[in-house]
Image (cartoon, rainbow, N blue to C red; front, top):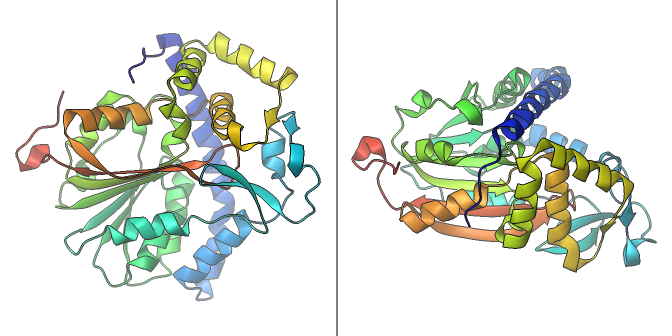
Length: 340
């Protein structure tokens, strides 16, 4: 699926929005620093820190979380309208379901952990947030001498990740500032077999762009796992619609106005993908990851090892898709240059 690039003014518009978004995340992450530090100081284990974090983000705040409802003026719940508290709405395997607690991503991290062979010497997460995803992998691979690399644009996110990993004195963590729009890769040079992970971080980049993937494939990353809300991108009609909204900031602003004035998000299985596309457009989320991976597969650079659309949605309007690929050609440093 090939789409025209957004216009320059649209890119500038979303770049400014991304800078503001990073600043907002940085401010939000700062509130975790003292809490994490206090738990570490009293001897909390890595497993306990992950458990406490999961409990905090899974705390009940309504059938649909209040923070989500604030962003959607109208939601047509249909047969779900009379579900009693404290049950909540989620997506599991492409369908709306009602659960007693927030769904977990354990199965997805189990999939990643099973793919880590003894030769892997580095796991890097791009856009790692507070570092808890890397911690989940460390808990699954406690005896493997792997260096974990936390790449994060926000200063407080990196600091939090460093604190989290102090709870495991045998773990090796390094953290680096990272921006998808101007990525540097020197910190990966000394590793020979690298696994890369993203978890709802590419979503924050409206247009990832071919240059990023060319650079990614020029490293010694041999296996990559994306857990991102991009399942809707497989449908050409939705892709063209959302691309049109992103090409012009005025069109996006009109779309936002219409969303707040008009149609509801309809909670029925047939609308899971449509709702996800609308949510993505509303938030200015990524529009090109699936196409970039498809092009890499078509070129023969990578082969898919896993693909599960809309497998889990803690936010029922932003479900995660798992995409995993393995390199089929060597990196630039091992003799085969990435395509240009």
